[in-house]
Length: 493
Ligand code: NAP
Ligand code: MG
Image (cartoon, rainbow, N blue to C red; front, side, top):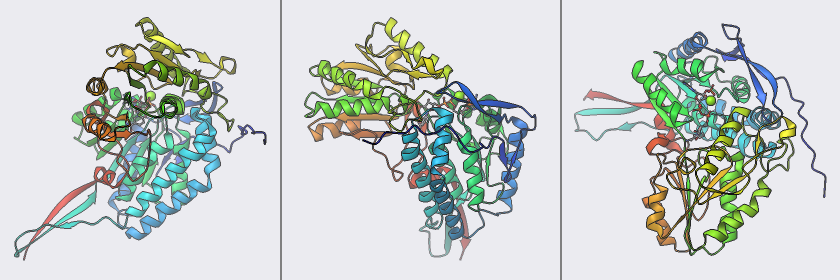
């Protein structure tokens, strides 16, 4: 077998300044913050810390670009070509982008290449194709009227994104916003700003005009808040925690009533009925569902709800798979998992684990920091059984590799438990009885439901939640609705 080579951490120079009006510029204040590689604890770049002044500069550039119609006014075919070129450039720079993502937020290099870069490129290509395929309508009025329903861009869209899939989360918002003709100001997460800055540069290379796609790295409480409160931003597309999502609703109310779309946290229930045929396959899906991407997934299968008749066996099987998900060096192409995003986040995960133990749940495996000798932030795949449904372990999003197992007797109880959190993002049900499974699927209060599978994904399907997981949908043609408005134009004939 060929030896697997660790990918070299040597990288091309990172882009570290804000990208405003087609050029990299330092923050007006001159301040910077450190981008840290969570696998080593070392700073790898000093990044411009944008604040309200920089955000205002970016919004003004975006507004100029929007009003002179240098983007929205182009032939849709030309906008499509630019977005397709952008997608192609992302693919061409796959290795560089993947390495940057891995060094900046700790995910395994193989995932960064095969999933993050590919999905970001596919997303820009998909929405690029939409540019010249979205039509308005003619309303069915009387013969002496013509009523046109036009679909128009909103203007300036502020995108605020998290660090778990930095490129993909940015692409899910920026691509449909650009496809509809808007100008964008993107505020990437403080932990992972580097790929967004490089993407903006590649977008310019692809022919997206100056001022149309701006990136303002910085802290949430500074750059994010300034974007949320800006009087000339027409919409905010946000992905992140439920807690910060609330802020954006307040910012909107306190400023210009900008529209807000929120993709927030989750606590996905993975429901397993007693009649499943292949418990081994179910265990594989549970382990992948919670341990993939270090558990830093809004749809992570963080709650396993299992019929008490098969619970002990399934828990044993999942625990036996945990070592296969033990984090390794993110630059090792064979590493199944990498570092969690920061030491701070590692601390939050370990606190949640400790509180879980104190709440009476039974620690089956994991529960500790690992690879501590590296200076990096790693957490062992962790499984708790006997978790009380009302405990913090079962209710709160941990955003780490921590599985909570809860038993049930019958599918009615399973549905009640599944729906028994503030969240409503993902849910999964497994049963040999497909009709029963689909009945459960209908009763889940969730935006994305998996039947006898987990984490199937495609750009063509809407993605988003209900309840306190937010509202609005990313992906699919439906996402275009978030970035456009309807205008009715009457003519008396
Ligand atoms: P987060 O702390 O809510 O931050 C998200 C973004 O908001 C970051 O860019 C952050 O900037 C910014 N922000 C933080 N505080 C702010 C404030 N007071 N005002 C304005 N902006 C502010 O979330 P995260 O820790 O980055 O990401 C994890 C969360 O994202 C989880 O809850 C996860 O479920 C959620 N998520 C949801 C989906 C979905 O589609 N539903 C997908 C992926 C992730 P800083 O980084 O500078 O703090
Ligand atoms: Mg944050």
